[in-house]
Length: 318
Picture 1 (cartoon, rainbow, N blue to C red):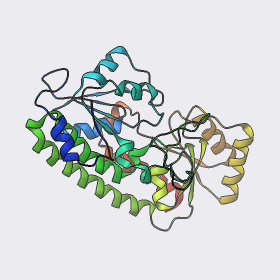
Picture 2: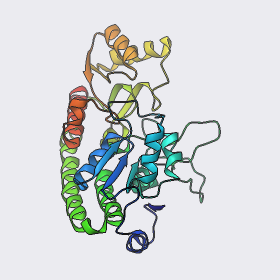
Picture 3: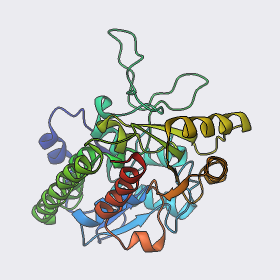
Picture 4: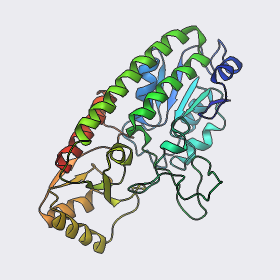
């Protein structure tokens, strides 16, 4: 397996060493993506590819359990895109080790400096002792992974991932390399434009610098603009808030004059509804975009990210 990583000294040498005219598994162009944003990326860069989305149909992306067929797809597809070795999807991360094709890790594309810790603010490597560097996605003993997995909300990382994805397809299917790289440049331009739109929506003067959210999944969207998030649940949506914590949220909403609580369809929604009802504020709908509905899947990823930013802009009073 040849892995495309951010720390490779020479990508050109990597592609030269790993590229071939025959893709694993079949004569067609095949790819597997672990979450919707990566499936979108693969489809934009390689429109000729048969892309398998592992959590298709809106299945929960956290701790995704793979079927035998999905494992075979990971092992035999020409290109595999996943979030990274960060403890987000353990079965996917384990299956990647047997992949014969080109592998793109979003966390490795980002690199340590652009990864966020699973908290309102901070980076994954902030607490490392001087002179020591923690591997991307490393876990502390007895604790959850220290990386926020919702990296796709950073358009700059996705823009770089478009280029990396084109290199992966070019290595697996060199006959179409020029087209893949040209498509990636178009996608990159879209995402750079999106970054500018997010700055207009969230980077100006806003009434609030914090958002109350049902699921703390929006650090990459908010943190660049100095906005924090206070979640009913944390990065791991399986965690819930106690009655005391919900009461504290209500007190904060009333003290700060918040007019909205931002909620997802499932994760943390019950707590968000309780908080909104108790404080008399409006619920706004958002999506973390790791899993999407059929209607969302028909939309463009750039449009979907913009929609989430518009909801936050409203909640923040920008």
